[in-house]
Length: 117
Image 1 (cartoon, rainbow, N blue to C red):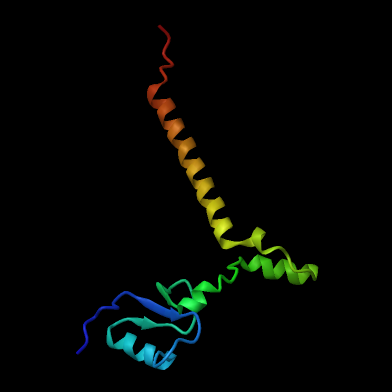
Image 2: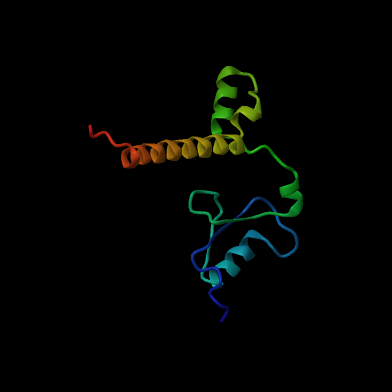
């Protein structure tokens, strides 16, 4: 009996893989090792399998708004404005700034003496 090495793992594939790595085989091998194989890439997927070629294609990973706005405006929008990498970096920067401000407020309350002498 194989060890439970994929316990708590949900595995999906980015596309066809070489050799015997078919979706059916991957699903079976994953289940044997107590993992879950998903045909869909959803919020539960913890590991995405891909080949080096698939990874190296550097296909733009864009927010779905890119497709929606492009379709509605009938003009392909620039991918850079909808890049997930850029959007996540902006979100992290906002979160860092919020933490910095919150820390400043806490320090102000801690160190500023408002009592009159």
